[in-house]
Image (cartoon, rainbow, N blue to C red; front, top):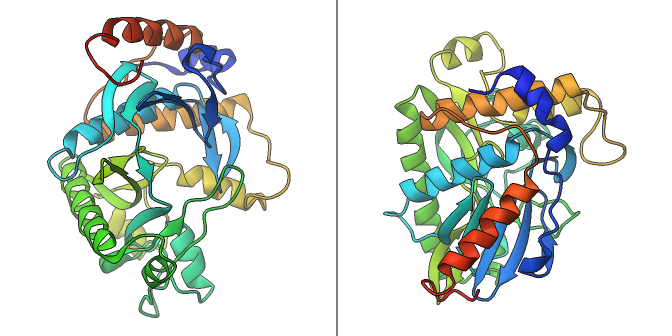
Length: 326
């Protein structure tokens, strides 16, 4: 397990961006750098931290934590739906199948938290879903709900959209949407059951889907600290009754820190000190171990040269074995 001294030593080496020109052109998402290579897509998970759809800082080892969590869950959910994963050449990288990504993110919620609570307390519907009056922040819903959002372009904000609008606007065909809805709820229930074994609650999460050869396929990350909320189950009831925040294993504490400083995604980003960045790194690493039950291992030092070396090696070894466009 990396101590705080190692995390501080990694600060000069955070992976803020990549320039892997030998792969071709780069598309930069909020957290991942994407490279299209033939019929495959190389996704490099950087150390960028995004809140309110804006990159606010970079955190040591965050990319590796997210990537390894995503791989863990992609392997754990293969029985529910096919996913894009082809290979893991590096701890910050996955190679996936190219997919026709659907323009809607599927958010499943079991508790009233985050943006859902902020919208609810402002009297708004949750992506067209009417939630009973009188609920409190962090309260458990009677059943999970689906609150879709549009998939925003880089630099823009994702926007809530109702299921009825998804269909009426022709974003997804009805039969496919019904399959997506069923699949998302099944993924959520599997996630809830798995983390419950380790004393955690899966509060909410987002899923992204695409089509590969016309078949519904799970793409991008799932059940990570950036795409989901996790709370500690043993203290939830007591804290809820006392009106306190749950013990959180996700990036919500950083969102709340920004909100306390008046930041909601517009204007100058408040400054993150090195001590704060190390504390967030520790939060991510500790949460990783609690979520998947595995100790996190990382090496202090430059990240991109290691990624390039591993990708070149994988490219060489797999070019003849896997006809995926190298």
